[in-house]
Amino acid sequence: MLRSLRPYLVVLGVLWLLPAVLVVVLHFSLPDHNTGGQCEGLGWGCTLPPADGVLLLGMMASPFLLAAGMLGCAVVAFVRSRRRRTSAAPGTSRRAGVTSS
Image (tube, rainbow, N blue to C red; front, side, top):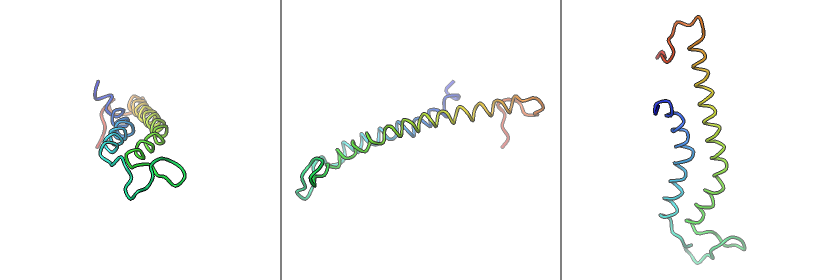
């Protein structure tokens, strides 16, 4: 069963889990204050501290990563169904599940 889920887990791991872990690690490892006397916050020439900037970028990227993960899973399902259909088609000499290298 795990073998049949492996392509989906790879897609979701790369597009959902890896960015989430990266945001958490960067948020806790980057400084939470600005250097050089810059004011903190948004607007009027102020900038976000690096730790908060990572959170903002993560929130802005999350809808696109969600859509990419869903699209990736749809592509995996489509490719797997096409492979099953061609391997089970009459007149083929290959057995289902056997691929040539």
